[in-house]
Length: 338
Image (cartoon, rainbow, N blue to C red):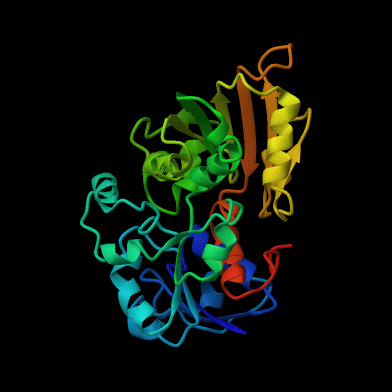
């Protein structure tokens, strides 16, 4: 069994992690930390199908040193202050916050407004998007996984198959998240009551997922920029992203062939033809559904539209984190997720 600790177990992502790991045949949830609920019994806070019979502990490193792997479902800035000691004690880390997602420390500090506590570990971290080319092998050898953000998961899976085939341009990304993507906090604009029967853009031109996406895109094609506009909708969970790409050297059938080849063997990415992804099809799953359309009747892809749906809390966070854990410990990707 894999001994697991979770830092930040009281947020939406932490709660989802617990729920999924309780179904995992090789997972033993041994340490749960929460500043909000420290000292309380987990079973008094959450109702899961199985009882945990454990108390929440304070999020300090000493409580986690006996674990095989620690998930950080915590606010940004927590993982980087605990990572060094955990790594020195042979504890693997899967960071669902953003502390290790951007490989350039200067860019990270600019966008997150603070000094990075352990920039040397950024170089050791591996970006945890298993469907990226040759990424599984890197994940399997890693001690620190930077679990991708929810929007970047949807958009990178949508764009990476063709990014090397397109000319210099700015790709427009129009993404919508369920209200749970705003996190469990008291921001009045992001409470479910405020989001009900509402739909709005937010963080235009300043969302922190932009530099994360661009870093991965630029590794493949430095001539691409992104215009990323996120929105919040009144649905509880899910992400729907639409991407607009100018591409005139392949027809739609050829583009589909590129996607089929890129995701061949993937357990979780589904490419569908002549229909649209729906958020309801992926909710409560680790799946990603992608569809492609040309914007004209000529079957030419001069204007290619790529649509993608994922569950923001699972493939966009906790499920992908468990998928990464499975790869790190030489288990099938699907363990505990199907």
